[in-house]
Amino acid sequence: MTTKAKICGLSTAETVKAAFDGGAAYLGFVFFEKSPRNLTPEAAERLVAPIRGKGVKTVAVTVDPDDALVDRLMATMRPDLIQVHGKETPARVREIAQRSGAGVIKAFSVSSSADVDQAKAYETVAEQFLFDAKPVEGSALPGGTGARFDWSLLEGRRFSRPHFLAGGLDPWNVAQAVKASGAPLVDVSSGVERGPGLKDPALIAAFLDAVKRA
Ligand SMILES: O=C(O)c1ccccc1NCC(=O)[C@H](O)[C@H](O)COP(=O)(O)O
Image (cartoon, rainbow, N blue to C red; front, side):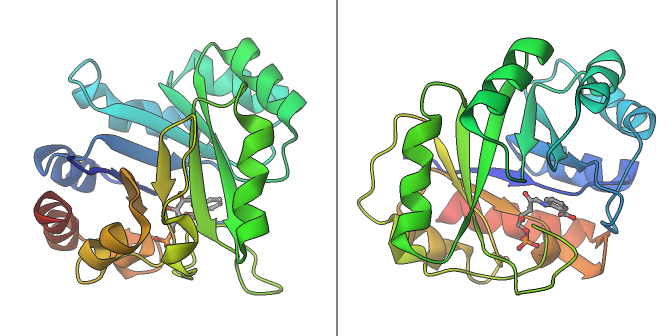
C-alpha cells in the first residue's frame, strides 16, 4: 500500500512548489493566530492558485473555527478539506461540513489508547481522522509542536475513515513510524522546518522521498 503525505503549515510559494513537486497528496495551511505558520485566507488563496485543480488536496487547518472563519475560507481559499484541531464536538463537525461543503479532518490529541477511541464518535461526520501527539501542558499550540506519541497505539486499529499519523515525524523517522503504526497517511510540519514556521524545501523533498520508500 502506498503511504500518502500531508505537508502542513506551508506559507511560501517556494515551499508549496517543493511539496507539490515532491508528490505530497495534501497541502496544509494554518489559520490560528498564535501559530508561527498563521496565514490570512487571502494569502492562502494566492499560494494555492498555481496548484488548484492539479490533483493535490488543499487543507485549511483551524482550531474551533467560528462560522465567520469557515465562510471566509470558503469564499477565498476554497479548501478541499477543513482540519479541525480543537475541541469540536461531533455535532459541530457536522455543522462545519454542511456549512462549508468541504470534507472535515478531525484531529485528536493522543497520549493513550482511550484518546484513539474518541474517533468512533466522529465516524459519520468527519471525512478523515488525524491522530497527533498531545502537546505538553501550557503549550500555546495544539499542533505543530514536534511532540510524538507512541505510534504503536494505532497498530492494528481499524477505522471507517482514512487516518493520518502526525506528531514529531521527520525524514529520518517516518519510515519507522509507518511500520509501527500501519497508518496509510502521514503528516508533518516542524520536522521539515529550519526554524519555527520556516519550511525548508530540501527537508520537504527528503521527507516525501522517505515516505515513498516506506
Ligand atoms: O502547525 C501549527 O502551527 C498548528 C497550529 C494550530 C493547530 C494545528 C497546527 N498544526 C496541525 C498539524 O496538522 C501539524 O502538522 C501536526 O500537528 C504535526 O506537527 P509536527 O509535530 O510539528 O510535525
